Image 1 (tube, rainbow over the protein chains, first blue to last red):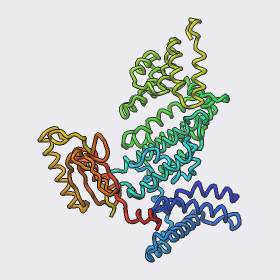
Image 2: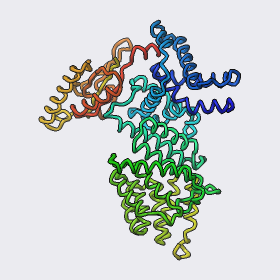
Image 3: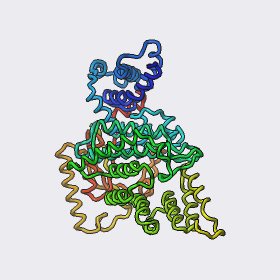
Image 4: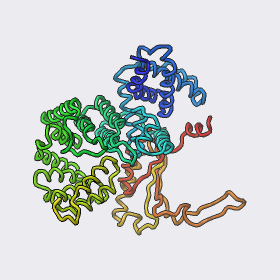
Length: 415
Length: 128
């Protein structure tokens, strides 16, 4: 392994551990972040001549600790001799279990419900994911100063309001884990259906990071919904290559080249879904939202051909999801499955009742159902609305082609 | 230990029974708030608590010039004002938020939780 590889690998594998350990030692996320960044900069400088240390994580943590102590001493904020002695000699043993707990504490701190959702996403990517400020700003299409201010404000609030760096109380844990999963799902979705006129339709950096962090959280707090979310991400990511055509157009599930799907990701996703099903069958808690979504995606990816899709099973899974989450967006997705089982007319009646006028997928779904019912002029209007609202370049291209393929109003034939 | 200001907001114009609708509801909220205060004292969180008179009774004083300038009414024009507050001590925000939720339930109003500055914050501001 070259030094560059070692540095990349250390950054990927050790960043969160180093920040987490330093946060515990120094009680300050900002100090920990700066010291970790300095430690990695020192590694870039020294490893090529000194060689890669035997235990890069321990080297980075020790170097980061020294940097933090230097800084605190410089700023003479902690000039108390006892405090300094504690920082110097109270080196905590690098017990893997304890360090993993640190990373988990870090995740819970970054996803604290007292922070805005945008701040939670940004902080998690910075502190746990190790992405740089410019990378995060680019990923969410906001100017760097804006993203910088968002992260700075969040760190200041954590400090001033004393947001704790510890595991949530047992009674709060399920809700807090849900909050963490919501952040990870948001990161993944932004990567999978990236918005913005000049943005790649799939942001692999974000989807990969979301999957990596979900794997980490699953290692630390195993549970049905974490497994479900990981399976959902894998089964979605598996289709990424088939999802955008060579001409940059979105390819819908029924038209995708299933041979281009990533079999390894699908196999892993299926294994995880089977695991959650077995847990439920063994008397575990009923499946939550992510497990149901993962199961729906498993049904899709089991079908080698779109025509073999078991739509009635998908409808059944959506029925369960609707009971759990009666939001109109879930009802919209259920209607798509209903169209396959009961026909587009039944589905259209369901869709027309939904209060989703500002949502591009609502108009795209209506457009498709109207098209299948031969109601071209109405379909055209619906495509127009969907195109006006869609933010993803590949989706806009797809919807435009579909609209332009409709029979022209003067031709008066069924399109 | 960190201290937090827990402010309760209510409408600018108060109804006959405060913001409670009826005498019974008002008495009930008073009793629940009293019990909550007792619990704060017993658990060592209590620093101070009280309810405020209507915002229209406030006077703004600007004493920066030669003579103080007085203005009738609250400093900020708003639809809702602080109707009362607690000052509590708690080891961290999670504890403060839990107490705020209990206080909100007891008094029947939304509660804003805001940390007080600490000595460290001020030192840092001074760059010391």
